[in-house]
Image (cartoon, rainbow, N blue to C red; front, top):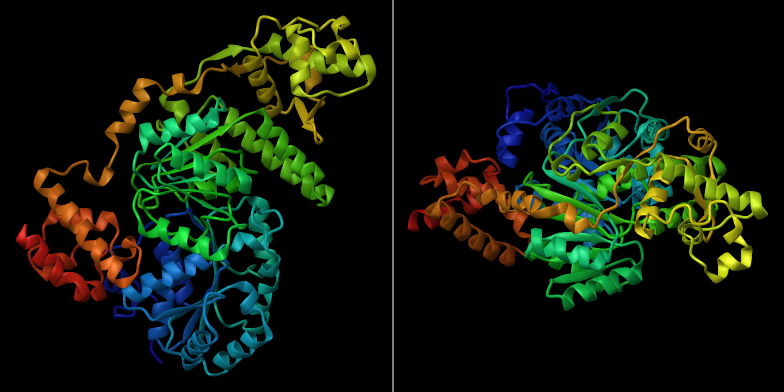
Length: 626
């Protein structure tokens, strides 16, 4: 049997596979160390950001071990979209791969199973609920007995953790892979996991002996912008029109109804948009997803049911019209932008109602108290990020335990928000909440509190006699918008808590020090979001538009556009998304280099042997004719 030394100077060596199959000249970051660990038969736990190249960390070992006679790699994934996408891309690159999921007919599923059992398949993608069935386990046992079970790759491994943002109960059963096939190496991968989730993955997947690889969570090409809600639809439309006209993006909403209404409204405003949520008919969901993958410039308005496993590299923005549940979810969702490394935007608009709604959902869930406590902590961390007046990226990376310096690219770095000494305003607001309790041992929501602070004579104020409170009218100098910003920031700082169906307000222990004047409170000014962006922000955005074309002269740009038209024709002919044929970055490199021979073309990153054979001459002829 051939050597399992991952550094072997043969065609089985990882570097040779990377270049021959995928067309890349070298591994990035920790990829090579991960690949060598797995090829050598060791287990690995990999935390790597979206777009960081996680797939290569198991695809290269799968190819190497298959060439060494080790058989098939089983990729466990809950994501049908990822299965279709990656199998199509692997087959394009000359790697025999398949998937087993509910989209296959019985005949097609049996054909795939025969390929798997023969050992001819290099990779097989399957959902966890299928992998753990008695039938599939028996098939794995048969492969194992014949030495044809090569590797288990467990993608989206955070799903095993109850502390994670996407817990799936079926992942808990995956520990049986180690119990039954202890000598088969495993690689577990995820893009997001805090300390709780990492510990859970190791424990529940029996990865105690695995090498842990943690890459930087930084996505420097993504610009983070978080703004206060002020007519959010118009804010979203202005953002798309000013900064991403005609570009692909994803807009996340919390409810299915809001998804459909927002998509319809955007279409009415001239933006090509489609809705996607779990309540749509399955065929429609698939058609919308296929269109998003294959067409340029579409905006998908979706719940978080959309996006996991979507490998579309040229998503130029991800927008949130509602506050996510935690930083892990926010990070993973925003990570779907700019997978090609070109500039992209993560844009979020939020308000006090979002904070109240998220807190209520936690409080009203049937989960155990400890789980609720952890989830409140995660929400508080997200609120701190949203209300920060320092670098967003520093805060985001710190959440994952990574130190960094100001990025110079987020909204706070580019246009530092004005701040003010909000100590007295904070004391007035906290005192207002305290006086409610002292007056009638009752709690009230934000609207009534602000009415009392501003001295408004409403029916509710009269009903409860709150015009007699010492806090009535003490905050008349601030507008309602300003008071809401003060309250939101005090919640983020942990001095106020909003609870229950109506978001009634209470004080935390830390509020005492503020009320006594022992703590100074620096607050961010509440201003209209459009004013904050300003002309300077738009100038920066315009300068970075169309990153792949930034340094192209007229002739080079003509070659790039011709290559994109050629790619579109090939993609339609093969029924594949265009980026599966070649990424924009590869086409841009071709346009700049203008290769005149197959040898010249083979040196361009992203051109593997199979694609060189399939498309090389057509590309050389096309460029030669220009």
